[in-house]
Structure formats: structure tokens, C-alpha cells
Image (cartoon, rainbow over all chains, first blue to last red; front, side):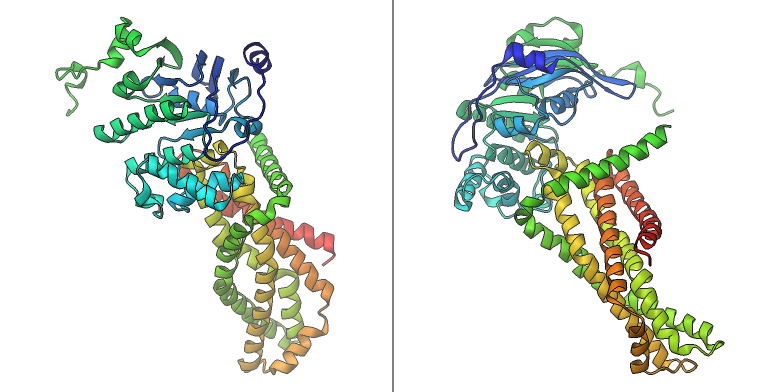
Amino acid sequence: MKKHIQKERFQSEPRQPATIGQTRTPVGVEVRNLGKKYGAQTVLTDISLKIEPGEIFTIMGPSGSGKSVLLRQIAGLEAPTSGAVAINGHNPADPDTRDRFAIALVFQAGALFNSLSVYDNLALYPLEHRIGTRAQIRDRVMRALKILSLEGAVNKNPSELSGGMKKRVAIARALVMEPQLLLYDEPTSELDPVMSATIGEIIATLKQEYQVTSIVVSHDRDLALTISNRVAILMRGKLLSLSDPAGLRRDTTPEIIDFLNPKIDLRNPRYKNMAA
Amino acid sequence: MNRISTIFDWLGGAVVMAFRAFRMLPEAPRIMKRTIEQALHGGYLSLPIVSILSFFIGAVLALQAGYALQDFGAKQLIGTLVGEALVRELGPVFVAILVAGRVASAVTAELASMRVYQEVDALVTMNIPPERFLVLPRLLAALCYMPVLTMIGIIIGWIGGAVVCNYVDFIGIAPAEYFQSVKQYLTTTKLLHGLIKAEIFGFVVILIACNTGLRTRGGPREIGFAVTDSVVYSLMAILSLDFFITKALGG
């Protein structure tokens, strides 16, 4: 299946070496007939998507619908049970693919290295991959910190940062990689509305300025409908809808209407005798 | 059947991890700083507890030997007994047990929390192999500090025996006579065998710690379980390997 996707959809591309200060060409992602099971539990069933180079693609859905699992398959962190994911025709789990395309993932909780300072967190990728001199790496790190307004946090430890700052440091760390594909796992979770809007602006700006392909997993309806080029809705591990934000607003599927416009029913009989 | 396959999966994972880590050995100069940090945390900071423990092991060994040998009029052999026991057996085994309790548990807790809080996933997405970044520095550090800790432990154990022999009335052997007795049957080969044991124990204990830590899934509760597993597996490995290494080395 993987080979099939590679041959049919994408041409193999020459390796693009990572260089300081260069914006790389965005990449396309294809997910075909993807299924994922953990033991007897089926989490994803027959998901097929094609994400165009340079677009912001948001995956929405209720908790437990398999959004983050799908993102982990796209990032190559887990192998699918069936089907395949291809990034410009290449398997994302292959270290050569990561090396070629610089795939960055912004984790829900940041996943910053607690034993390293903010600067060292950001400098880790270029240092480990020997990209540039120490001075060039410092420039690159400071530029990323400036874009995210984090210059004051450069010498802090991640444990000293607020939730919003951790998210921004995680985005800055991804930015230092100069990625062609940037994956966000719940970038606005646990943030106040103002910080959520800031993160949304950052994601949209990165796409405009750096033409990076962005895949965002989120519960945040406003974020999804504002910044996305297209939105996919997952329900119980299946792809329920795939359209642009305007199309999604017009969608009359009851489950989508309920998901996008939840109502608080103060007289719900389900919770009537809770105190008893 | 499922449990057996889990055991083989675990063992296979450990072997593959060691293989991958040592395949990156040519990149060792790049991880020198982290290796030194690990050697400092694992080796240097273990010195006080190794010294205290070794002193009392030597002391109690001399005392027990004194009780046992006085009936035969063979007290002059106490030094030989303490010297040989520490070099061939107790030195490497007890230092390895201490490293399992103090260092391996910390390594497992650190790596398990990195796994649970997705720091290891972050390394993978950055295309930084965890085997190079996390495992190899710890293994190299263990290979450096284990023989040093063991040698220090042995010497302090001998001193503990000497103190007991000198100050316990019914033994009453002077330090010069005691150390003469220690040296009498001690050979470089025996010392080398003890250090080989220490190297193998150190390598296996840290490999178990890394493998257990990086295989952790779940939440904070699983980190605690992983630490327990790591220490238990390490103790089992030390004591069972001890038999086979002793047999293979012929003493």
C-alpha cells in the first residue's frame, strides 16, 4: 500500500539540505485507507485525506474520536494497523523522510525537555544535526524566540513557564527546525481566549510567511473556522466531513450541527437525581 | 504464552537498544558532555554511599571470619578471606546492587517520565535517535564509573576489615600483618575478574534501566511501576549473571 501511494501520487524529490534562514518548499500529505487498532479496540477506520502543500488543515472532533492518534500516524510516531500515510510519497516513520522534509510536531503539553533551558530546547535540533556554526544557531534560535515574543524567557527552565509560554516555546522549537510540515496537537487547549487567539494568529502567520503545510488537531471551533483552509471532522474514528470552513458552516448533518453548536440544557433529565 | 512472548519482546528490545546505541559509538565525541554529566551523577555522587557500605561489608566480614576462624587457630587467614571475598564477589556485586538502587532507579524514572510526557516522541520527530541522545551516554558512563567505584569499594572494604582486626580484642591483628595476609593470595587476574564482573553488571543494570524506562506507557502511576520493575530486574540479573560469569571466568 505504501509503495502504491508513492508510485501513484508523488514523485521522489531531491534531498533538501537544511540551511540557515531559508524557507523550504511545503509538502503534501496523503492518508489512504488508514486504520488503527489498539488490541481489540478500533480507534481509526478507513481514513482517507489529501492535504495540499501550504494549506492549514484542521482535524476536529469530540474527545476520543481519534484526532491525536491520526496526527501521531502522520508524524510517523506510530505505525498504522492498515492503510498508509505518505509525505510527498515517503513514509513519515522513516528517519530519511524526517531528515529530508523536517517534520515538526507541537505537542499538546509542549513536551519541552525539562532538563534543558528554553535556549537549549530550541538549539537542540540544529546542534544535533550540525546545522550551522554556534553563532548561526544562536541567530536562528533568537529569531524564533523574537517571532514568538519570548526573548525574555531565553534562559528560563520550562518548569518556570506558564501554559501559554510553554506552547509558544514549543512552536518556536518547531520553527527553528524550519519545517516543511508543521503538526499541532491541541495548540489552544488549556489556554484563555486571548492566548488562544494569539496562537491562532501565530499559526496563520507561519503559514503566510513561511508557506509551511500545517495540520492542526483541535477542539477549538473558532480557531478551526478562522484559520483553516479545510476542516475534517472525525467521529468515533471515522471521517464524517471534509470541507472548507464555509461549507462546514452550511453542513446540515445533525451530528456536525450538534458538535459545532453545543447547547447547555439546564433541565436535562439525565442529571436530575445526581445528588441522590 | 502471552507472558512468555512479553519476556522475549522485552529481552529482544533490550538487545536491539544496546545494538543501536553502540552502532552510534563513532559519534561518541558529540555526546561527551552528556556522558560526563551521567558519570558525575551515577559515579561521583555514589561514592559516599559506596564507601560507607563497603567499609561495613569489610568490617562485618572480618568479624564473622574472626568468630569462625578463632576456633581453628587460623586468624591469620582473615585478611586473605576478606581480600579475596571483596575482590572476587562482594565488591562487584554490592556496588552493582547499589548502582541498581541508586542510579538505575533514577535513570528509569527520568526516561519513563520523558516517555510519558512525550519528550521522547519530541526527540523522534526531531530525528534525534533516543539511543544516541539518552541511552549511549548512560551506558558509556556506567562503563567508566563501575570499575572505579568497585575498586574504591574493595579498598575501603579492606580498610574496614583492618579496623576490625586491629580494634576487636579477640582478633587483635595489626594492620601491617592484615594487609600482608590480604596481598598473599591476591593476583592481578583475580582483580581483573572482579572488574570484568563490575563492567558487565554496570552495563546490564543501566541497559535494563533504559529499556524499562523507554518502554513505559501510561501515566505517573506507570512511572512508579517502571522504577520497581527496573530495580527488581536489575537485582535478578546481577545475581543470576554472577553465577554464570564466575563459572565462565573460573573464579
